[in-house]
Image (tube, rainbow, N blue to C red; front, side, top):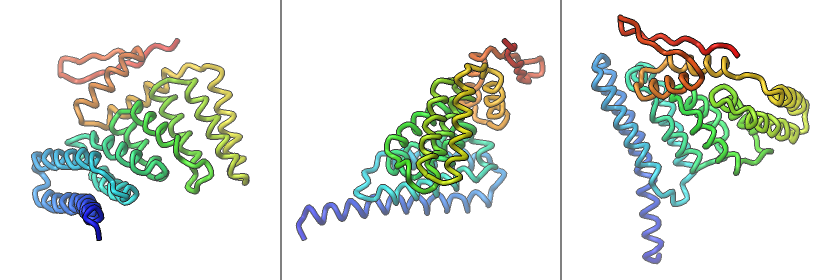
Length: 260
């Protein structure tokens, strides 16, 4: 075997070992956390480790293991996201790193994109980044692939409508969803295509999305403890015309924007 082949084999092993080691490390951390569950510092230190590992892994070369790394990343996301007690303390900021890494490595991982798009918009409060990543994935996804690829367009349309208020982009997304659904050439595809066409026509009438956007942002605000995410959402609410005040007890009050 030539030296270059040995080198490539060694680098492949390093990449794979790093991913597996990160899984083991995070599992060990979870066991330690359960022993001192009331200690806030444990959650914060664990969050630093999750974030550091996710950022390092994004920079790792794949050496032909892109799909495997994407699968491992999704498993780590499930572990991270599923620990609701810890996330109440730390927030969900690392979700974006997981989502970005998976889209870059395996844009055809449809089931992952559907789960992570909702998590990134609803819990991390970054719908703009969600739409960017969904657009990136949709450039590669086969519209006739299994696992309902047309749903990627509808999830993106939901972000564009509820969070971004971009009705023109949402209309296009629903039209593309209808087109992809029809390519199934079955009853389900035709039924869903009809629904999406109807929604696209409604959006073409230029309805006011402000109240829907306000409700969507408030649903995230009420469920996050992450200060950066809270400030980001409050800025978005102000942009919608919401009135934000703090009473004498330090309690935040948000008054919805006036109806046009």
